[in-house]
Amino acid sequence: MTTIYHLLDEAETFSERNGGAISRWAANVLRDGSEVVICPSFDSSWSFPISRIYRLPRWSFTDPIHPILYRLPWPMQKLSYLHIFRPFLQRLSRGDILYVHNRPECASTLATVVGQYGVRIVLHMHNSH
Image 1 (tube, rainbow, N blue to C red):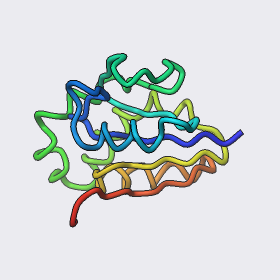
Image 2 (cartoon, rainbow, N blue to C red; image 1 turned 45 degrees about the horizontal axis):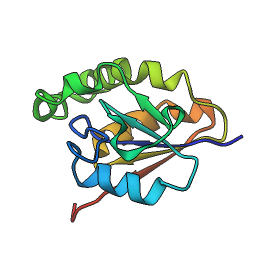
Image 3 (cartoon, helix red, strand yellow; image 1 turned 90 degrees about the vertical axis):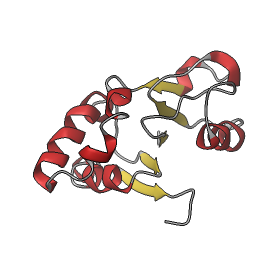
Image 4 (cartoon, helix red, strand yellow; image 1 turned 120 degrees about the vertical axis):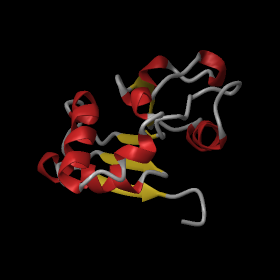
């Protein structure tokens, strides 16, 4: 069975009260589906079943260093992101789809490894970039 995942950025709490625009987009668009939201933190304000929310360990730790992290030389950036995403990558199955929201550097890093899992990746930009 294909699972569709949506990776919110490292500062985006999945919360009606404390989340931002991408949290609101995900909650509204994904409400009646079966997709899984991947986020640094969440609360129960969107009333999503816990099975549809995955808190990525260490993802929030990148928030204060994000401007530095995505400017690192590619090999260091790739190693750093892969270390952060390792727990999530273990959940993936052949045929899954991963939407990365507003983080092209994460999408490019993940694209280097998800092919071995048979996973498709989509970069979804919510702004003019």
